[in-house]
Length: 489
Image (cartoon, rainbow, N blue to C red):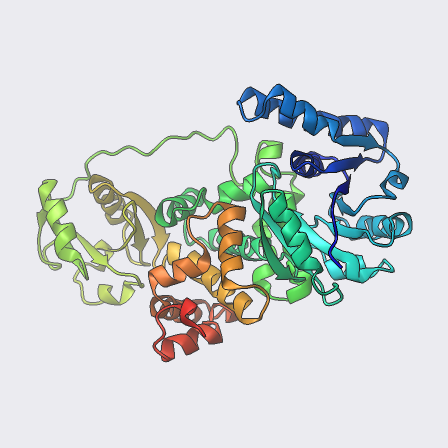
């Protein structure tokens, strides 16, 4: 059967639920918004009026359009008012017991043809559906905050979902002006499964002392072009929310990369939840601003490795003398990998600093166990003089950017290979849901499959983390000489 979704119910009118109600009303559908009590209902009405009021002030709505949107929404505290809804979507707190109880009530109240949807970001849609007598008519419809602005909707189907229903819900999402991606019922779906694993990995690297918070943030923002660094994003999402999603991921996968980093648990326990509490990984009272750019006092510099001539020329133009490794005050080794082995051949190994140029804006400054703090500071100054932002880190496999980026790309390959979601859907999800400049498979093609495969091998050899081992599909594609994962038949 082909359903006609004209009457929609939204249960839970917090910021997210009110935003979802607005999205449906903007598309011309009648909406019944339900809250637990009159006070919560008035807050929900306030969310909707405030959001449309801001759109009016910015010229994105006229007075008449705003009045039409608000006029399409009916507010109530009774679930019984959803009896004739074609679709009901819940946006209540992420507590499984609450959702299961609600769906039991909705199953009793709603007409037999009604579709029941959950906006859960990580909980099992299958488990929620099992509380009803209509599991085939239960789907996930995961919007992103703020719902009126964000274009992505993840449509989640279960093993019991009726054939064709996910496609009908996806068509409804397109009617709302959204871009749907269809995924199976796995914890975290696409966006949170990939994003939170990456953010947690950043927290682990911070805790292990690979690099400082601001250096990691700068590396991923300036080096990869992400909208913000991982710790800025964690504070924005909320450390408690991130912790809860990771717990759900770990409960399903038992993969230790999903186990929340101890520092994340510690901050949550301390009540430091991010922006909403005024402190998380970043604190409001911390001073900001870039470091000074004084010219380092370096007599001569030796530059080794691929690209050495170009960097040496830039340094010479800036007034620095270049010399051999034996005679130089500082030795810079351009490399993607640890440089400690080079130190053994130097008369003064404390002068050696690894340098990895990433993109056009940053340079990873890697200190070995022997590097002196003076040499490291000198190279940081040299990096700034040639127009790049230094990212200080330890001399470890793949340094910072690639150590975070490659496992994320590997996770995306595993996700696709499992049949969980299509390449185009995964790419769209990360671009629309996270604001990434490219999807993971677009990044893979740009970097090169072999480069990423080899980088993962280096990470696995360094950290012995099983999930860093290249996905079998990635290994097979490189072995077969395939240049793009999109070339698969």
